[in-house]
Image (cartoon, rainbow, N blue to C red):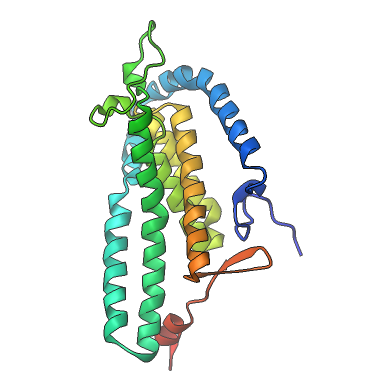
Length: 249
């Protein structure tokens, strides 16, 4: 059997070998990464915002996909309708509705909870966005400022949403892993190009999004929803009832 790379082995409870035992070294390593990237924040921000207009127009279009509404609203509606259907039906139709409800619920929570965490953290931390930069005050904070958009830079909410969605999609359809991650990375980079975030902001958002999706999956595993876990491996349950309804003769 071909050995999977740590990043693409989605059956593990956490990515990159992360566990409760080594959480502290990982946290320290992340802090060092952010500190190292900080020195690239301003140069990369200036360079990205100076890209040709055609390139910037593409990223301006891509950045909208980092909004969470287009995921959360349909996800919640699908969950609600499937849940109601499961109460009003029986037999295979009820089982199929429950499968759809579990799927929609996972998408909603897998993206929604990390995005909510990013929304709260960026307001608590209050880091200034690139537009607040000056030669005399190149690193500014206004913590616990809940209304000042220009001081809600860290972490990037768009990057969090994009990477949590990528992880959710990969958990459900592992073959889509690289495509989903490429999409998320493009959305995250767009935040630098449009001048909304620094590289450190999108890096933190990417980590938060992926780990948040893993945490939601762990919750579903513990509840026996949508996923199963055995011998340290996690996998999606087959949509047996739904498949039976669609392909029945």
